[in-house]
Length: 278
Ligand SMILES: NC(=O)c1ccc[n+]([C@@H]2O[C@H](COP(=O)([O-])OP(=O)(O)OC[C@H]3O[C@@H](n4cnc5c(N)ncnc54)[C@H](OP(=O)(O)O)[C@@H]3O)[C@@H](O)[C@H]2O)c1
Image (cartoon, rainbow, N blue to C red; front, side):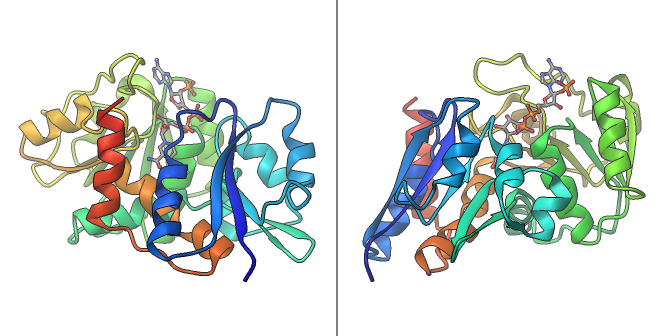
């Protein structure tokens, strides 16, 4: 087979760890091909997605701020991409550009690998944040049988819009209610950008949580966010954002290069070293 090429498209894109992940798999499975970064300025993304093949690519990952445009530019999309409303994975089938969103499935795979006893339908879930990451995770939880998601967002309108979008399973609350209304949840998820390196800290008390509550963070730089450190200090199960990043990458690699890659401790150690090395 002739070499195949994929990339990650974003603006900026220099910080992305995706080339490390896919580069590791290309080497591990001895596949002739490449996975590179493409910085595409806002306003140029639709044209770029339209000439993906001419650019030499069989597909790409998409990151901020082009995830919405990626879905709009595709000719066909998976149910996940449509439900989440943004796409993070594109691939060509003949002349047709397909879009998928793999965040929700990636989140759940890592959650189940970390806490095998997690039962989505057993209790309510609290989600902080109402952006693309939050919508991906909510979709994954509802697909897995989750019945009640309590959504807290600084901008209430955005939480209301997400609740309407996922009619039924999601209830929106004010940001200030996040502590009071999370006393009985089985899973608390930070899907805001708070706690990220360079961003303000997330203010979220954990003392009120049930002793069996799992605490997850989508943020993966730093790897151990203040929220996860506080959860561990309270003896709660903690699920980091890096595992989600690794698992969400699997379907794209399979589409572009024809092999289902494995998320291993070795791969994780490579990305951890990169994050810790700055
Ligand atoms: N691990 C992974 O694979 C993975 C995948 C996707 C995303 N992520 C991470 O998840 C986080 C969110 O990503 P996204 O794509 O969903 O971003 P996004 O669409 O920009 O949403 C950002 C969210 O953070 C909230 N927020 C920002 N500043 C805030 C503040 N000062 N106080 C309260 N809330 C604040 C926003 O609230 P407003 O609506 O009020 O602005 C919004 O809900 C990022 O850290 C991203 O790296 C990780």
